[in-house]
Length: 30
Picture 1 (tube, rainbow, N blue to C red):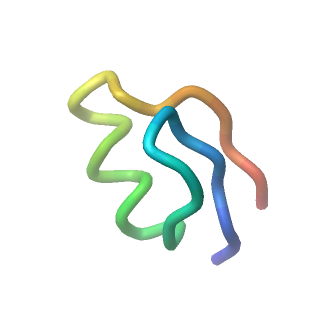
Picture 2: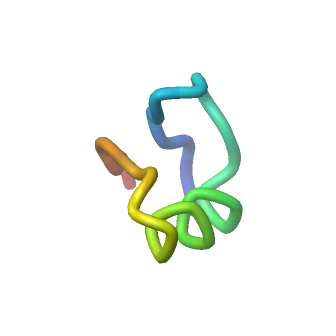
Picture 3: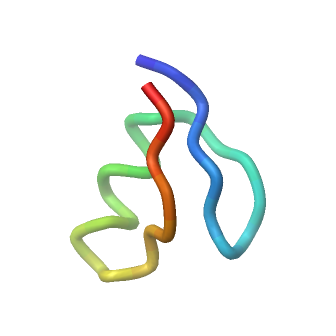
């Protein structure tokens, strides 16, 4: 768990993982 930084801002880690599959994830912070 944690907060990640994406092109759309900050969001929950579980949401980020879904975005990562779509190739939208820029950086992960755990």
